[in-house]
Amino acid sequence: MLHTKLFIEVRKFIFESFKKELAPQIVYHNFTHTEEVVNAAYEIGQAENISEKDLEVLLLAAWFHDVGFIKSLENHEENSKEIAIAYLKEINYPEDLIAKVCKIIDATKMPQEPTTLLEKIICDADLFHLGTENFNERSNLLRSEWESCNKKSFSDIEWIEQNEKFIGKHTFFTDYAFKKLNNQKVQNWLKTKKDIKKTISKKAELEEKKTLKKAELKRKKDKDERPDRGIETMFRVTLKNHIKLSDIADTKANILLSVSAIILSIALSSLFPKLDKPSNYYLIYPTLIFLFITVVTMIFSILSTRPKVTSGEFTQEDIVKKKVNLLFFGNFHKMSLEDFQDGMQEIMKDRDYLYKSLMKDLYFLGLVLEKKYRLLRIAYTIFMVGIVISVVAFVIAFKLMQNG
Image (cartoon, rainbow, N blue to C red; front, side, top):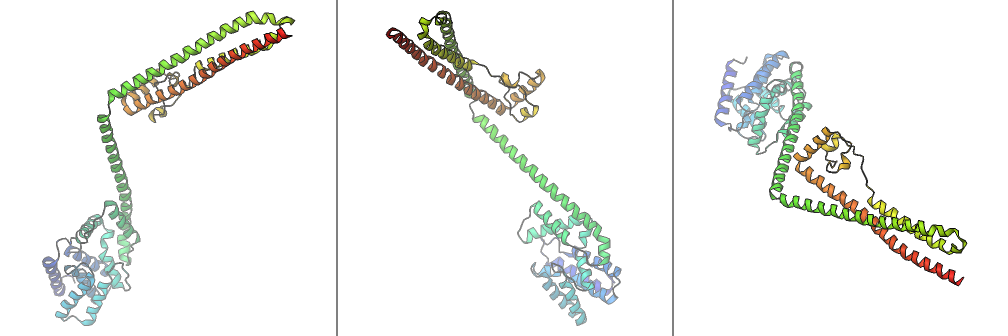
């Protein structure tokens, strides 16, 4: 039937119309697509065992269903019907069959809602490519056409998601199309879903690379702008000053300990032996106050110099996450040499990690100094006030003894 005189002339008319009048950016709804729809309609029509006359009407509708694109993109079905009516009237085609052809063309409007078998056949033929292996090729042509004609661009993920949504909702109407095309359509749908995941993953990867590249450029810029020698001098001088202050605190604590120990020795050797005599009872309370003050002073002095060592245990994950400061011995004294070397290499190859470790070292050294000087201040205050109180107590005790 496709090679009868009627269809040879119709094919020639459609071909010349597309060739002369179709805009070059219409790369999907062209003669190639129209011929594919005609062949698909013929294949489905024969499989569905429709009559010769119905098959003729169906094929005429298939040839004319997209020819309206030569006039405009909007309402192309109406343009297609006008062209079909004019052509078919010119060749004296029956009026009732012309009306039938137009009704079948109307069925190709989106969303498709066919009611008769012929309408279902042309709908399946129009979207025949959904169930073929060249689905992606046809889809890309449609995307190009939409972007060129509608002046609208789609990102890869937007287009793939649109295809996935369309295929997911689509169903073939005829038994033949469903049996022949549905399996491949499902495969195309699954591949589209997989492409969505790949595209999202690729986009995320590109974003990550872009972020890392920005971070690297910023790091390099900061490196160029940062005065390295000045930073190193700052750390060196500050750490040296902190260590010197720590030595001063320890020296002051040692002085206070030595003085307190001497005073305690004298008190124990000179005062205590006299306390067992009834005549010296007035010395008991001043001596006890004196000893108490001396002992408390020694306790605070010892607390200010008492060393504190951390556990020295950490995991490789702590190094990777930059949570440990290997510059302080208390953090690595329980490590094996190999682990310590690995950790130090990690610090040396990461400039930010190195500086952060120095900052931590400086910070915690400052906390230790604050504690040392606070305890030392308390010790000196107790010693100073205690000496005064002790002297006053002894004076009062002597006065009471003389008055008694």
